[in-house]
Image 1 (spheres, rainbow, N blue to C red):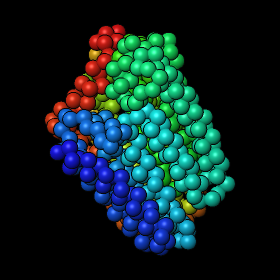
Image 2: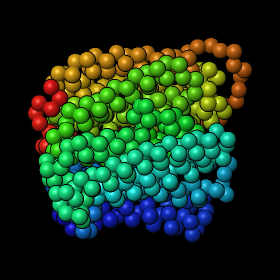
Image 3: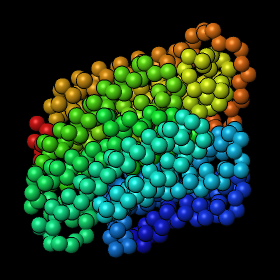
Length: 495
């Protein structure tokens, strides 16, 4: 089994890498989109097989530099799904931009971005994980600025400056973690996650506390947790729609993995109150900021971007609460958000191209003008607010139950109020775009390609099914991951 999973892991990463090389050699737009799509499909099939074959085992490969465990493989699965769906959508969307001469560059970068989100969660060395996260920044910056408009170039600069500042803090935290380990393990050692966790009880609590806070702020910037979120609305809203989907549905989860792995180390070091308390505070503040900006938002894709901040806050709360319910809810929410937000950005991109505007007040009667797209996008809007019968309702409810179990009543009350505000504010914007009459001149609506509709179906149908039925096998899988992550946390950590 181990050799099979090792081979599948190699295929998972080699497929996009080979696609990049062939795309740059052939330089033909139709060939480029086909190669990228095939690579994404191969990566998705590989990680599905890995998750199925791995069971409860935690495997390492290639000198223990690569780890395939529950948290990592689940995050890779979420990223691979988004990469595949976004690759389908990109075929229809990117043809509308009139950039045929540059499309091969886009797909080479897109495959590279997809590859970096797949590689990050499997890094078993804290330093290599940091390099993988930094690589996602460097590649995606060029994708954000691909359309070469003033707003997209400004967003790309803001993105790389803000995120690089955060990642620099994460690097400092990583160095301090390594330094703290030298007092226990000697001047040189392999900085694997297991090594850090095993050494954590003997580490200096003050030094570990400072290191964790630096790492949390650094990777929290990449996740988009408030108040380090300032890059996210611009980058998500100005990049091409398939890039926005990959940024929101794949990259944010990949960065969250680092926070969770360091949280396990913090638990083992005996600083659970500080570590989890800070993560919970950032999660709640992210919900608060998202609620404020969603209510008053005027840009279609910026509305989706602030929704990403909201859901990263929800996931942070789930991991912060911990326990079987909190971790299961957070993991389920990672998948649900990846599917749902991909569909929402696909719909937003298609509507923007159809109406030739990014402004919500300039979009009217979506359902009557684009019936199929309008129906799918509206269903996605209901789902993304956490309303039943879609899967986000179940994952958010599970996280709320985890908060009640850990006696975090104030945070749960605040979360419930903010989710209601976001529900009303978000759907009010859709009421404007679907129902309200406006002084908008009749305009020619660009038809939506089947390439753009198919991935929305592929995302929303599972969300509906998983909202009605949470498979028992999936619940057991989450419990195994929760047991591994919560092993170091004291039972009374949050009480």
